[in-house]
Amino acid sequence: MDWGTDLWDQYDHIDKHTQSGLDLVERYIKFVKERTEIEQSYAKQLRSLSKKYAKRGSKEEQECKFSNHASFQEILNELNDYAGQRELIAENMMTAICVELTKYLQDIKQERKTHLSDAKKAQQNLESSFKHLESTKKRFAKEWAEADKATQQAEKTEADLNATRLDVEKAKQHAHSRTHTAEECRNDYAAYLQKYNKEQNYFYYTEIPQIYNKLQDMDERRIRRLAEGYCQFSDIEKKVLPIISKCLEGVSAAGVKINEKQDSILFIEQHKSGFERPGDVEFEDYSQGIKPATSDSSLNPPKVRAKLWPFSKKHKPPAAEDFSHLPPEQRKKRLQAKIDDISKDLQKAQDQSEALEKMKGVYEQNPQMGDPSSLEPQITETAQTIGRLRGELTKYETWLSEAVGGEESTNSINNNTQHSVVAAETTHNIYTEFEDEFEDVEAPIGQCSALYTFEGNSEGTISITEGELLSIMEEDKGDGWMRVLRANGEEGYIPSSYVKLAP
Image (tube, rainbow, N blue to C red):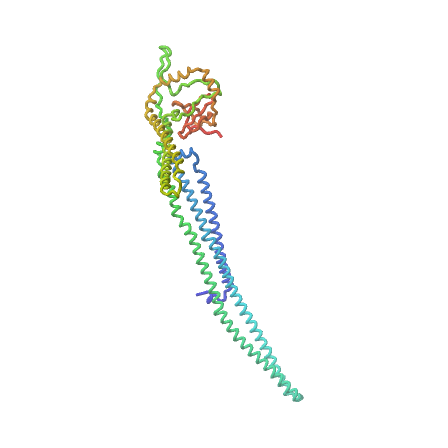
């Protein structure tokens, strides 16, 4: 079954049907375009969300050492990759479906227009031929009527006794002429009728079937191409599903590898001070006379000295190079970090030295490639750098060894010794101290407010109360402690997480 055979007389329906098919292709293209816009908007929002919650800065990098923080960062990274796959879906849909189908639609519109134009032209030619046939037929009918009338007139003239012979001859000649003309018209009509029937037969059995079959073939190709577009809609997304699955698996893996125990241990290692717990408070027997307590309670730690002026600040010596101003555990961490940095720089310098020596050897063997002596300044400078770094590495390793070895002896110092040192400092020349403080006032670098109450029980720390406004004298260096100044003049270290920075 085909259109040319079964729909030979359904031009209008074929016209509407093929136009409906083209409208469907155009509608599908618009649908895919809107889908790509949704994908692009979705991907953009996912990227913005990932960027919004991504950690940045030294404090956040410190937190990312914990597995639960690191896993969340991995989830954000996976989400960013997932957004990239959504963008890829949108791009491929636009290229493979929208662009290609739009181009195909233009071609098939032109092809349909040509076929319908051919069918209409053939129909017009047949109608024109039929009008000519009707005209020939009418002329034949008219001439035949005139010939018949002329013959009857000739017979009537011949039967009239009063008519002359000339009149009879004249009437017969006129009838003969009319009959001859009628015969010619009859022959023309018969010939054109035969021609028209042949054209009509060609129109209905050859020309129109061919045109309609071409339209059928065009419409079937259009349906097949649209079906491929439907499949592409799914296939494009299927191609990225393995990568999307990997992204989602990465999210799951990030959640699975969280180790809560390890995070707790890491937090302890980062923030433990290494000090011993305060000893018992000794009983002071007033019945035997007032006797100063020999134990230093961490609940009421002795102050080094009272403040002379509300606006004066305790003169803090600059941070020691060996980090001896820090608590033992923090000092070990800082020394180890310094050793690691120096080791990296030393390895880099050694690699550079080896590369220069190799280059020098190549230049010596191939003078045309370069002058070996031109490398001597760099080699000398690198050697000096290596020597300096080795010296620093040895120095910091010695300090680390002392910190590790001397920790126990430091912690074993009794409270009496500490108290005597404090007392000695208290009896220092008060005027000299006031003069030093007044001339060398350290300016705060910021303000913060206490979120929680903290009891400073360890040496170097101070107590703060919730809501108290503090001045920041030294920022957190990555060990979780910061140096602050209270309104009453007390200065010391507190945990960084116990305060909120003022805007």
